[in-house]
Amino acid sequence: MNPNRRTALKGAAMIGALAMGLLKSAGAWAQSWNKAAFETKSLNDTVKAMGGASAAESKDIVITSPDIAENGAVVPFSIASKIPKTESISLLVEKNPNALAASFGIPDGTEAGITTRVKMGQTSNVIALVKADGKFYYTSKEVKVTLGGCGG
Image (cartoon, rainbow, N blue to C red):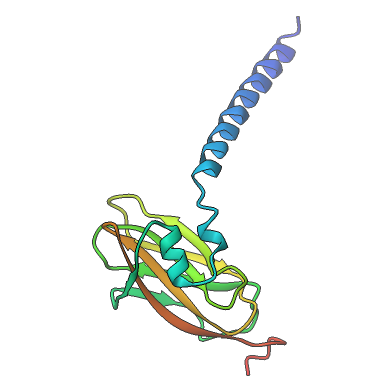
């Protein structure tokens, strides 16, 4: 048997095994996805879907984003939490069809901050929702979306 062919077959088998492992881990991730939270329409509904009772406003959460977004399809956001024991950071857009746009788990011992881009259909309040030590906290900011991209 040709040694190059044997090496190629071994490589293909290893790639197949790796792909199967990735598919299994993707299936586990999909099972842990909170579908109900991503179908909510308001902050209170989102908090309840995530297992909380209510959320308190906090000055220890900072949203960094443009005040005016010239392209609502890709609005950049950075959210940082100074609240100890931050477990997750979520971003809600009030006037989108489904309020919850993104949610990120924060591993223990890491800096509690995220950067992402979301789609906004129109000018809206955006809400940063933080789960820390089993409780929920939020802050909000208005982002204006201009049509036509002229910035005015």
